Image (cartoon, rainbow, N blue to C red; front, top):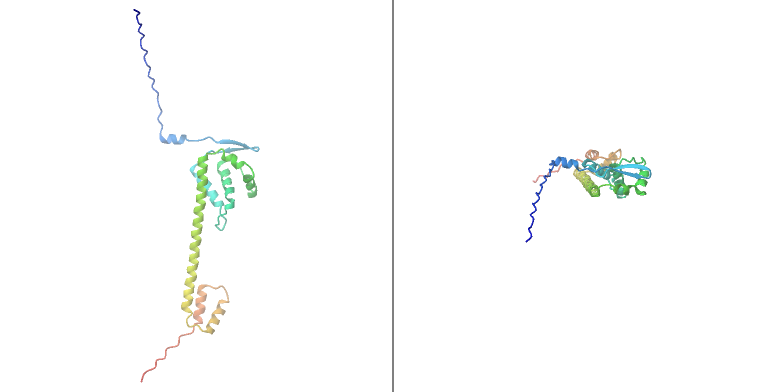
Length: 214
């Protein structure tokens, strides 16, 4: 009968892996991305992949401010251009031409804008553009509300003036109306001038004659 040789069991080594604990502040600070380098038509351009919170606000402010004319009306035809303008200004170190038409040609008729946006954080960029659009819509509503209030104030002012004129015009005869017209023709018409002219030419009311009964 063959004997079975017993082999001693190997001891299992237990390795202790040390883990480093970091704070949430340290973790947040470690979230970063290196700037990219874009070589475009002989220009070496530095491109930031992400914007800070302050830079995001700056981006949306540029787009909003440049999308309205001096009268406060939205100009939709410049929207794509100002989006490109804000993108170059906030994401790169490229110095754009001073002439607006040259800026427009550079951003509209070349692939510069596409080359830059291909290097940035797509999710953040999409969110920024959407925020800029919402900011424009909010400003449109604010401008419309302000215009409605201004119109209402003008109408109310005119109605008040009309009421005052109606109140003081009682008893003005033909000669009095002629005097009012002459007074108003001498200069700028305003509320005080109208009232003054009417009062000066208003026919005094005759006392009512009382007939005594016998």
